[in-house]
Image (cartoon, rainbow, N blue to C red; front, side, top):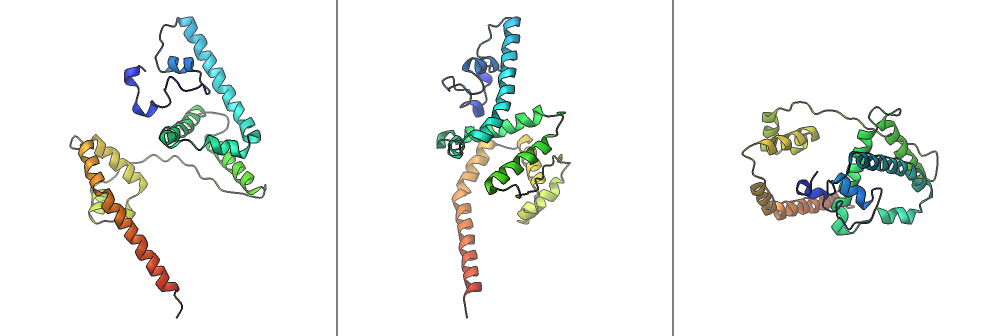
Length: 217
């Protein structure tokens, strides 16, 4: 990946002045293609060092989970507002990296995910008797009926649109030659205030209805 190919979503992560994490600044330059004057031997050594560092970082999480104080953990996951979007992207990509990396691993990803969530729930409850069911499934989205989705939209039956239909519909829309992101963005922004007011009005009506229902005779 060259500097020109760097997606905007990596801008914060790829900042040359960012302190080292798992990766050193030199590691980042290597992976991002900023530094290319490596021999075949030095390239292999670099890859080996990165692999060892990542593997040891995975082991470090056992120490972090058991020993890092709660206030320190909470501070880690409380980024500044200007970094929040990049930080959320980092957490998402971390999960994606783990999912890809454990494909074919001796223990399925979903089992490790379930055990991890269960452990954290027990810590929160301060009891081993805290038991939860964690469901994780990867179900591929099949072909959707575009006419059916459009019919639901035209009928204002948005609650009947499934998450799978919505994701597939948006992807198909973005592939259409008639789709103009700038025009759509401007149109949506023009309706944001009206939409927000409609939501607030629905909340007021709901609160009023509850008040009427719970008012004593």
